[in-house]
Image (cartoon, rainbow, N blue to C red; front, side, top):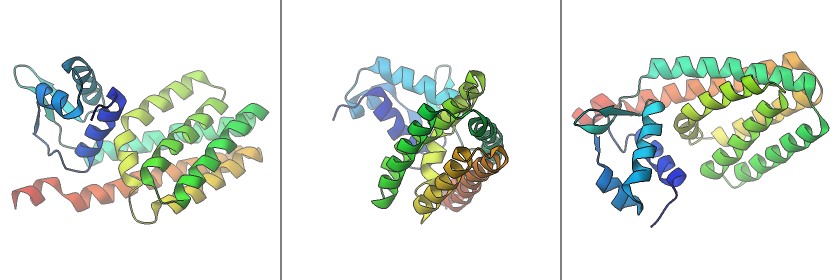
Length: 220
């Protein structure tokens, strides 16, 4: 089955984040091209993107291999992500326009629909739109660019934590609190709500990494 480059990139992210592709596994361009029904050119580009995210190592004469996830580095990135999102929330509460409010509300409702049917993948995509709407509402393009860049780097891990039991309704409740604070024009509450929302994600992912325990499970 043919997939666009974004589609098979997300599948590889998922395979790596969940341990289906183990650290040290070789990612052969020809095999991946056959698996996803694409040429080797988009495969090379996706591997470069995964390397930029820290999920893949590109080694001379050996090609691409899966990197071992580093829980400490991930937690550090989530901490920075929480601060960036908190800043976006604070500024959005101060600078919210009618158009930005309408966009945020539309993405909030889309997240609610995905949460109601219990579809973590659908929720993931709507969640992406929700956070980007807040970045835009901050009115600070540089901050929005930095937040989006780190958001993309953490994408597979943010996606993974959404599969934890009862996470979707919890995440949606947090979204509702975030929006209430932004719409009411309370920058302190918006900042705190977004910070807590992202830190929860980091903590939950650390729990998942610990439970997977890649090294010991596969060597036992």
